[in-house]
Amino acid sequence: MSIFKHAANILEAKVNKLLSRAEDPAETLDLSYEKMLTSLQEGKRHLADVLTEQVSLENQIAQAQKQAAKAEDNARMALNANREDLARSALAEKQAEAQKIAALQEAHDTVAAQARKLMDYEHALQDRIEQFRTQKEVLKSQMAAAQAQVKVTESLTGLGHGLDDAGDALRRAQDRTAQEQAKAQAMDGLLASGVINDPLDHRTQTEREMDKLCVTSGVDDDLARLKAEMTARQDG
Image (cartoon, rainbow, N blue to C red; front, side):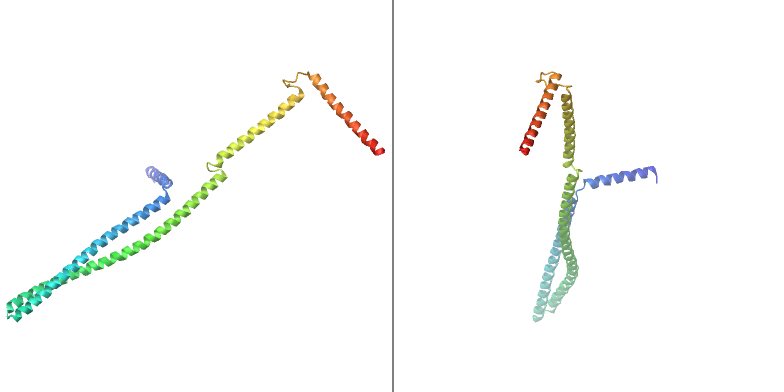
């Protein structure tokens, strides 16, 4: 395979892929249905033309039959009047009309057969169109349901644009919260160690330590007192 042929195949594949993505299956089905309806209407017009021709031939046959019957009546009347010459002339007209009737009848039979074929075709096409319409609506419903399911699944799994952004926002908020918690713990440690001070607390580090020691000692004294009182009650 030449390099040009290979490039052409690749280009054709890419074009077909783009067309497949751009194609809306539901619109394609509707378009096919419209084309079938157009074909049905064209078939009906052809059938109407053929039936018109058939009726025209039937009218011509009826007119020729009238002329043939009239010619025979004229021949009978001429014979009654002893005018054999006129009778022959009238019968010649009758024969001409008979030939005309035969030709018209042959054409009529051909047109009638064509009309029957067109009617059969029309009925078959109508049935096919109705079947296609039903299948089309079923496929469109199934397609819509499948597309909805895909969108919901994409949203739930984060493949779509719904929960994907929400998931990123949640992760950023969690990271920020963890950073703030770590910062708060670090600040508490620095404050407790005296590295940083409360701007409203003007005590020195020694004073703060002494106050803390007093509080602890006071707690210990209270605890010892409570224990002694409880022991005295038990002994009494």
